[in-house]
Image 1 (cartoon, rainbow, N blue to C red):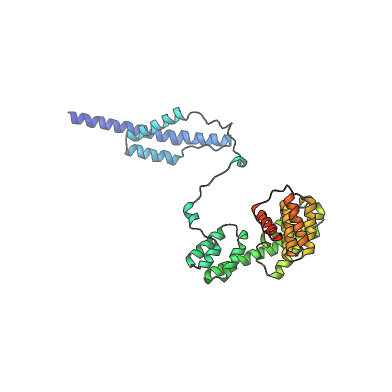
Image 2: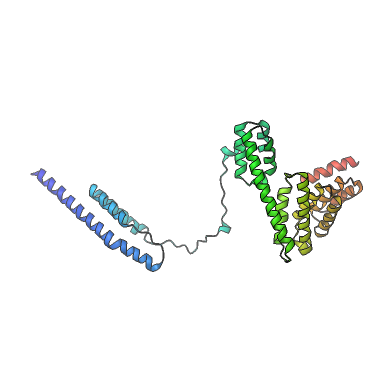
Length: 324
């Protein structure tokens, strides 16, 4: 008697579970899904809602696991209604990329195993050399062309092949870009100086690594000086201290002391109290072996209010000692 009663109750529970599951499926598929889709179309905004497949999957789960699954879905829905019933107030939240600074944690394990490409070439371990070379290629290649040039003489043929391919590609890009920009600058007459500024900075970034042959290096240095001259004629105020220094040092490397002196004078007129103004003149007079002008500039630097960096301070100490 008790057994039959338990079976009867079990069958009633299954029947109620089945009815509830069917009603849930019909309401979800026939009413809820179309209503949410229609609301999304009317407002023109994206609304998250369960699709028909979701309701079918839940229906199967409710049939396979009676009572427990329906109660789980019911409790979850009630929890959502009572806890997340209000929309988040984002009025005071400002999403501005300018005000966001992402601090990435350093990968100490990777950084600990990184060595300079020059050291890897000296050690000449193929595994280390290739690993370092791959890491260099992942970064800004244009800043590492001088180091990549050293890899051309590597005993590892694969590394030297990659180095030659990378250098050839980057140098061709440089030649084509400079040629295109120079033609545009020479042909147009426009007060805008953006092209000249861009080209001077770009050429100096490559030329200071000394990766070209002597003939090409000299050619591009004077083309850089030509662009700087055009920039000076258009608007001298657009030539920053860094650009003056770049032009002076590149021309000085060509041992063209007269042109270097011209740019040093211009730099002094525009930026008389900058450290780079003094250091460029010191390098010029030292290379030209003009002892009197060198020590005159050195004394002027010591008496000025210019803040001296460690390298220049060491230079002053060395030559002050020699002078005595």
